[in-house]
Every structure is written in C-alpha cells, then in structure tokens.
Image (cartoon, rainbow, N blue to C red):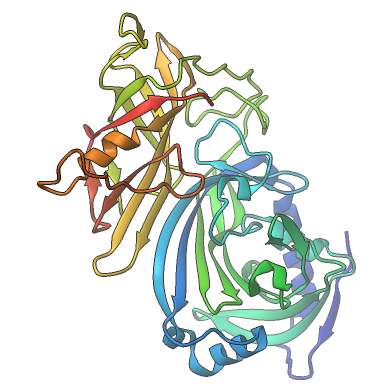
Length: 437
C-alpha cells in the first residue's frame, strides 16, 4: 500500500478533536482501493449528454491565457451560446489496465478505445473508475489539507493534490495520437463515514496540437447498490472542454444498470453478434455475415418506437423486411418478407436555431432468417430518398436535391424533426440496398 504524504496549509484548521485529516484520508484511500478490487467484475451503462457552445460574438482570444482570463472576468454565460446537444449510450467496464467501451448491449467491447465508437465531438475517459484510481496509485502521492467546507449541508474535509506529467496517466487526444498531461485537483471527503463525496480535476495548459486550452472535470460520488452489495461510483460527472477557438463543450455523464459478470463469462473482444441482450458476454465464435450480392433493393419497416427526447446513440432498434429480398432477376427469394432486423441509433442530435433541427441517424446490423442471426450490411437508397424530398410541383427531370451524408455516415439513414418532443412510431419504412461489409 502506498504511503500518503499530507501537508497542512497555513489556513487549515482541525474540525472535531478526533477528525485527524491524515487518518480520514487514509480511510478514504483504503475504501477506494477496496472498491477498485471489485469493480473489474462489473459493467454499467454510461449515458453521456454532450452540449457544444459557440462564441456568442466577437473574435476568438489570442491565447489560452487571454481566453481563461476573459472567462473569469466576464462569466461563461455571457460569452457563449448553446449550438448543439447530442446523447450517447455505452457499456463501460474496467480491466486491469484501462476502461473499455462498447455500444450499450453490444456483444463485444471495442479493442481500439472509445474514439473508435465516437470519432467526433468532445469525449473523455476515466469517469467510471480510472481517474480516481490513478490519483491514489501515483508514485508518492502528495495531498494538502485545505480545511473544512460544506456540500449540501454536509460537512466535508477538502484536500488538494498535484500530479505532474511524469507521474500522470491522464491522456488527451491530439490528432491521431494520445498525449500525457499533468493535472491538479481537489478531493472532498466525509470525515465521519470516510466516503468520497466529490473529486475535481483540472489539466495543465494543453499542447497546441490538442486544439484545447484545458479540461475541467467534476465527479460527484455515491454508493450504488449492485445486487446485494454497494459500490462507490460517480452519480454525476461533468467534463468541460475549453477550446483554443473560444468554443466549449460540456459532457454530463451518468451510470445505470450496473451488473456483475457471472459464471464462466469473460470480458471478450470477440463474440457472437447475436448474443441476447442482458446475457453475459462469453467467448463465442463469431457468426459469418450474410453473403448477398451488392445492390439488391431492401425495404425495411421499423418495428421499434423511438422517443426522440430520450433516445441516444447506441440504443438498439428493431425492424422487419417489408418485402422479400430477391436476386437480381427477381426469380429467387434470398430473405423472406417479415425477417427480423436489429440495428442501432448512431446519432441523436439537436441543432439549436429558428427552428431547431433534431436529427437521428440509424444503421441496421443483423438479419435473422430461419433462426440464424448474422451480420447484415445495407446502405441507404439515396436516390429514392432524394425523390421523396422534391418540392411540390418540381419536375422529375430537374436536378434532385439530397442530403450529403456526414463523413463516416455513408451507411446510416437520417431522419429530421423540428422538435425534440417527437415519437417515431413503428411502421416507418425506408429504402436500402444490400452492400458488402
């Protein structure tokens, strides 16, 4: 067990006579590390709500120092306007070396990290457990006791700390690489129960290649019951990304539906795409994808209901073939009408304006025929979709108007609405083509 070095600031004072700040912090550390030994046996659903803010007016600041100084002087609310909001739903687990992620309910965790799932927008890792553990696992961790304060009428002890770049495991994405940065922070603990109440972390000024000035993270902790036991987990995490352009992003992260890996199941980077939702992810040989010729028309009918103001990228959807898939000569049925499909929402985003634009991007992933569920690759029929959005009275021979897919979304279909309070009922049909993986 690592020793803790604790310095007493000149302004700090003891609370009750038996509230020894060193003893309290040691109890907090021991509780955190005890929980850490059990967390790798569990996975939780992580929901992330991401808000993006643009500069309200004026040119961007000339430097990070100027930007951070202006934020303190003017207040963030007067400088920014909310531009977009999107939601993500992931599964997260902790291995011996890192946090690993997948879309919620997926059959396997991704090997390449969270940026393989979420390649765009502000995203961070470590909220589940890694950030907290790295503080206590640093070589010769040093804390400063800053005195007492209150959080929602609860008396807590405050400690500050500083982790240098040499001791840090905090990684920030810069282009295609991950860079290590140092950070400072504060820790609030209940002296009576030795519960960790809040952890705040602020990075050092970040390298120019990251396009950010700093990242501020606040994690509020509580005891969450999983089965018959309670575990220390964040109840709410807020990550604030302050960019060199003056724009900012804030991610609000919550965890739910935590469960234990049972029996002989393992955290696997392979697996059957058809693994049933809620079952453990065991090492199962992958099912080969359906081998259909590319370019065959496919009509899919949605059988799920999508509550737009609650939906998130990562949520599962279900559908059916509204018509059989036939070979190119239309002589042979390759997949019957009514065959079940499963897919996933890939983007749920609101762009604020007059009016707001709410978009949902979705993709289909598996097709089940005669009890066999296997990967199924289809792409939207953009030409048919373009014809459906012709203006009234527009002649067919005129150039068609269509929406160019975003980079990386060529296999997704996108629905647009002017309000978040929309329900997409089952029965919606969309045209697609078969494609090769």
